[in-house]
Every structure is written in C-alpha cells, then in structure tokens.
Length: 230
Image 1 (tube, rainbow, N blue to C red):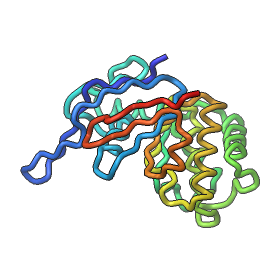
Image 2 (image 1 turned 180 degrees about the horizontal axis):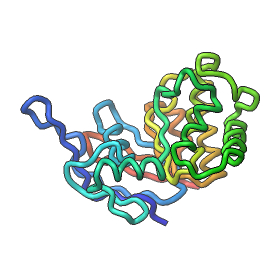
Image 3 (image 1 turned 30 degrees about the vertical axis):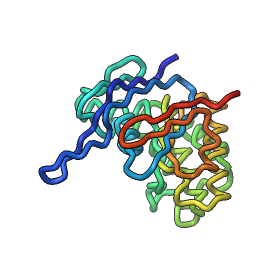
C-alpha cells in the first residue's frame, strides 16, 4: 500500500541573484514498511529530498502526497502538525536536550502529542529504551552516554510516537564502524517488528547494504532505483 508519492518535485534555491537547482523533477513512490537508502555524492540533493518528504521545506514545483493527502501546498502550521503526528527524524547529530535524561528526552516527544496518561507514557518509554538496548541507562544524561548510545536515544525518540515514516539523514556519519552497525541493525529490527517505513541517506556502503531498496540520486534527479532480490 502506498504511503508516500512525489510527483515532479523541484527545488530551487537563490544564492544572491543566481538560481541553484537542488532537485530537478523527482518522481518517487514509497510503500508502507519499506526500508530505503538514498545515496549519491555531496550536492546530489539527498538532504533536500529528505527535507521535502519530512515537511521541513516546501518544493518550488511538484506535488507530495502522504497517505493519499496532498501536503506540498500546506501552510507552515499544517506542515508542523503533519511532522508531529506522522514523521520521526534521526539526524547525524543526535540533537538531544543535554539537561534531560535519556528517559526525559524520549518522553518529551510523547508529551508534545499529549495523547497518553502518565502511566501509559512511562510504560512506553521504558519499553522503547529497552528495545534499543538502553535498559538500566534511562536516568543518564547525554554527557554520560557514548555517541552510539546517544544515537540509540535519538532512535527511541523518533519511534516512540509510532510514526508512519522515519527519516534519517546520515544517521551513522558521526559514529565508528561498530556503533554504526549497531545503529543500523536497531533500525532494521524496528522496521521488521513495528512496520515503520524508513528512508535514510548514507555514504557508507557497509550501511547501505542493510537497505532493501537503493535510490541513487545525482544532480537532483533519481539516477537509479533498485530493490534487493529476496
């Protein structure tokens, strides 16, 4: 079943008086439950594409549909609601709040939605932190955790509200190879167990191999789109 559809997405930025095209007409259909990597050289448009999909930016031209609803022409306020309720983000830098514990950083994402009771929130946060391998470290702050552990907190935070779509922009770029593999394995496990759709960018061929669909972006266009043979 289709979760996301992009039709002829273009994005042009202004640098002074010069127009710089970042995306030149991207067509893409993503089904629910897919595990996709976007790769390509620097400047190919990977981050711009993720920003379009994540409602962090709007296209210059073209249409984006999420769950069949056209979102490319929504207001900033409407886009913020789409992000809050439907999309989870994992970044290169974990972007945790340094004065909050691992538990509180993950809890914060749920409090923004405000749907659960205190007891339900507590149960869900502890369960999610255990799933990403942080049982017993719930009360540690980011400065008391390793880089890999902080990225696990970031994954838990992205998944805690049970979003339909998880976007990860170079999620392992700041990690050593061992921690990078641990993080991508957690993402793979969550995709299989929870059925969330993952789209992530990476330059690391070792990480890329865990995806089941590979999208090669070059000069703002999809150069190739292949699915791994089962």
